Length: 228
Ligand SMILES: [Zn+2]
Picture 1 (cartoon, rainbow, N blue to C red):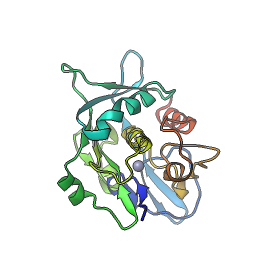
Picture 2 (tube, rainbow, N blue to C red):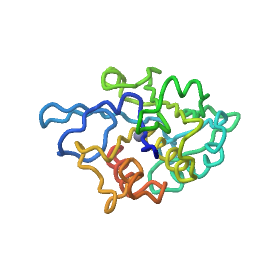
Picture 3 (spheres, helix red, strand yellow):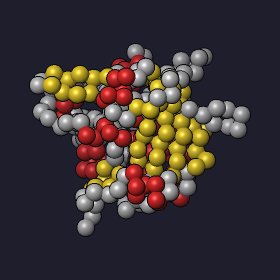
Picture 4 (cartoon, helix red, strand yellow):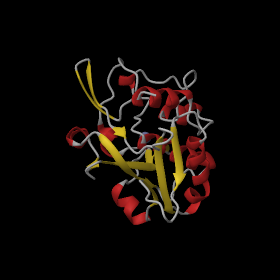
């Protein structure tokens, strides 16, 4: 049986899929009450002070296997895109704000066991400016709302190990680092994967996906969210 591939962002996936409505900018955390959606805007704060671009500086030394092979492609995808972000690999003298890790099999199997039809490929954990981990609507609400770091955990043995799977997953998780949520969620006027492709959409990945590059959808979301 071919497993359906999914991504999760910690507890994010538990939030409801209900009816459509609303709202540009796919904030990661929200709740819905009746037809009212309450979002928690979280914002990545590290910036390049001279260019004003958001700054993601990665320690990739704990990547292994195909994740290490395709890391540079995912990094370059964002760094070279029209999204106002620079994504670099930290040198020995630089302090990273984002860690990418291929976990051990035991850790992965304990933390993110496969469902019958689902497999988690990557998980992004965000940290606020107090160093508090954000893993739920409640912890997001209690946070400073300002993000200063992230850990990206990657499945050591994906069932579907194509180059596209690795590149897309890493690129997708980097979108979460910037506080982008999922663009396939019906509450958020979901991106139509055919006419509005988005690497933050499971639907695009599963049904349409050919690219792991940030799309116009991501460019517009980041510019809208951060006021560029
Ligand atoms: Zn995701």
